Image (cartoon, rainbow, N blue to C red; front, side, top):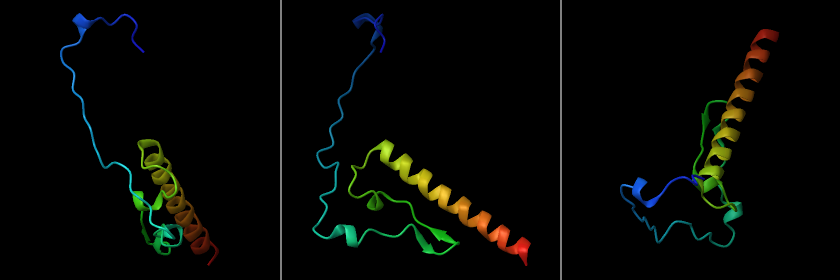
Length: 86
């Protein structure tokens, strides 16, 4: 990424290791994944427990959050349209 960087430019380095990063999905977990909508149109959930069968990474978390945010917006739009029609 930075071809002009030399060893003299680096002040310090750190190594981080997390031995237990990924969950071990239990058999049948796909049937127990928490829903995104807990109370329709009112309470939503976005947690890494819902990313199965993907790995729990930043990309997956952003995709999950974006998907849930889009559901919230769609639900709010539908509620506004329903109220306007009444």
